[in-house]
Every structure is written in C-alpha cells, then in structure tokens.
Amino acid sequence: MNHHPIRTALTTALISLITLLSPVTARAADTGADGLSTDRIKRIDHLLQTYVSQKRLPGAVYAISRKGQPAVIGNIGPYDRDTLFRMYSMTKPITAVAVLMLYEEGRFLLTDPVSRYLPEFAHPMVLGADGSQNPARNPITIDELLTHTAGLTYGDASAGGVRALYAQADLWSSHSLAAFSEKVAALPLVFEPGTRWQYSVAFDVLGRLVEVVSGQPFDRFMHDRILAPLDMRDTGFRVTDAQLDRFVDLYRRDGDGMTLSKRADDREFRDPQLVPYGGGGLVSTARDYLRFCQMLLNGGRLGDVRLLSRKTVDLMMSDHLGKGFTEPRLNEDWVSRTENRTGDLHLGFGFGFGGYVITDVAENNVPGSTGTYAWGGAASTYFFIDRREQLIGLFLTQLTPSDSYPLRAQFRGLVYQAIDD
Image (cartoon, rainbow, N blue to C red; front, top):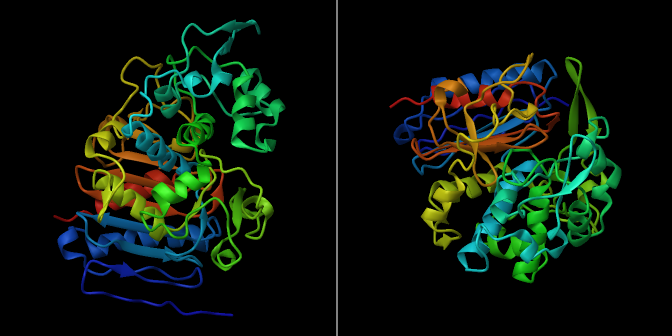
C-alpha cells in the first residue's frame, strides 16, 4: 500500500507534519522568532531520508524548540510525534529529577551515604587486580550514584572482572527493585567510590532509593509527581492495550542494513509484573519527552507546574567530574563521533546528574555551547538542552546498538547549523 507525503505549513513557529512511508522528506515552516532557517532544517530531513532509503534506519522523528516557541517537528518513515518509543537510558534524567525533588524536600543530602537509606550498601567491597575483594575506603554517596562514579557497572559476560560477575548474577531477573538493589550491593565495585566514571546500573538503584524515601512504588512516584503534572500522558513503564498500535518495532544493525530485533507486541513492556527500572524502563513520545526537556530548559518549571528550583536544575546540569578524572573522562561507545573509531577519544564532555555536559566545544568538535546537557538511549534516541541558546534538540528512532552510526553528532551539528539570527 502506497502513501503520499502530507505537508503542512503553519504561519507560526509550530510544525507538525506526518508522513507515512519512508521515501518522503519532512518540511518545516518559516520559524521567524525562533531564528531557525527553514532551508537549513531541510538538511536534517535529507540526512535522515538517506539513512531510511538505504534501509539503515526504520524511520525517525525529530523536534527542535528555541526560545520557548512551539517546536519544529519533522519525521521520516512511519513515525510521528505520538509514536511510542523505547527510551531506555533516556529514563535516567527523569529519575534524576525524581531524586532531586526528594532532595529539595529535605529528605537527604546528596552527600549522604546511600547505605543510610539502603542498608544493603553498608559494606561495599572493591575488586582488586589480583581478584581479591577489599573493603572500600569510603561509602557510596547519593551524588556518586547520580554521576556514575560509585564504582557500579553493567554486566558483560565477555568482559571479565566485575562486569562478568554482574552478568552471572542475572540482575534483570529480579522480581522487584528491592531485590535488584540487594543483588547489586552483594557484588564488588569496579573501583573505589568517587574516583572514576563508569556507566552503570546506578539509576536503577536510585529508583529503589526513591521508593524507600518517598514510601511509594517508584513507578507511582514517577507518574504522580512528574509525568502527570507535566502532562506526559503517554509516558510510562508499561504499554497498554490502547497504546499498542502506536508502539513500534525495535531493529538492530545488521551489516549495512538492519534486522527486526523486538516486535511491538513483545512481552518486554507488556508484562504487568515488570520491574520499573529507573535506568532504562520508560516508553515515551516526542510530544511528551519534549515537555520534559522544556521543563528543564525553563529552570524546573513548565506552565504552572514547578518540579525543581532553577538553582537545583543548575546543579543537575553542571559538570561534576572536573579535571581530576582519568582522561578521556567519557569514552563509552554511544558517544562516538565517527563510524570507525580507533583508540580513545577526548570528547570534551563532563557529567552532570543523569546526563553528560559539554565542557569544551572545540574538543567536542561539534557546534554547540559550553554547558549543554544531553543524553541518549540504547535504541539511538538522543536529546540535548542548550540553555545559552535556549535550544532543545530531540531525536527518536529504534535501532541498536546506539553507536551504529554517528547519528547524535550529525543531528546536533545539523540543528546548530540551522540557527539563523
């Protein structure tokens, strides 16, 4: 069945165009006060059209908002602003907001040992190079969980060391966040808390912290305190029957093409007994996640709803690593700039609470601003928030692994080149 492109041009800054099959290109209206060039935005469409027509991407939705104006929204392929995506690690910034909301209520200090609230972490052990386990010299603190500097990691059976132990522990079979936290606490740390950066399950542990401190199940807290107040009506940990027709398949890269990885009706987000992991459990839409980003850009407020103070958002979006961490401070595959990486990259990144922070634009080698806050998910999703330019960029697709192509750097560069003021 063939569909033809649908093109809608609005005289205001708002664009929402929906196209139903891949051989089409999104179009944006003249955004005027936004200071974004219509012609230059089309370069984003051209890039994404190339990926889709070559069958390297199943489709994509992007959104750009500047200076508080309604967003430019474009899409290639079968997605639109209300399509449900697996957000995976783009759950982490929302979990960070949940933690900071409790902090603002005076429930804890960010420098508190997490064991004060999760006693299973009272005696962390560090795995030595010789395989021995030795007591950590310092406790794990809440801010170290927020910055991935606690010594936790992710499991990888082929990696050896602590990552192999994580894989053997079968963490994701846990029946609750409490059981998950206890399993993690029983495993040794990769390094002494507070001395290095390592991407990790820390935000899944923080979900448990929110449960204990708030007295509510984590998913209930997220819904009642963040998602519902922000009118993120399609965001949650489960895909309902009513939402299923808007939830899309997941693909993985296969050579120069892609292969179906998970169907939309897969059990992963349909199981009523699933555990709401704070590190990667949410599904959301472009429309919803843009509202979350706008709240952060506004300094913790969206409309009449204030979730955080402006100064707490400042803290969240500050670099907490500084110069004392091993260089390159962030060298995970998902932030790669090139398709054929050799060796480590110095990426000009630091890390805030739940997302990276650009500390050096020249070192980063993509147009942007110092202090920009950003993060992505395992299915190649991505967002960034530039408070200096009052700019949000959001990119959603469903392709693993997230470093299959340099989509994030390409998208961010193309958003900045569209600035015309």
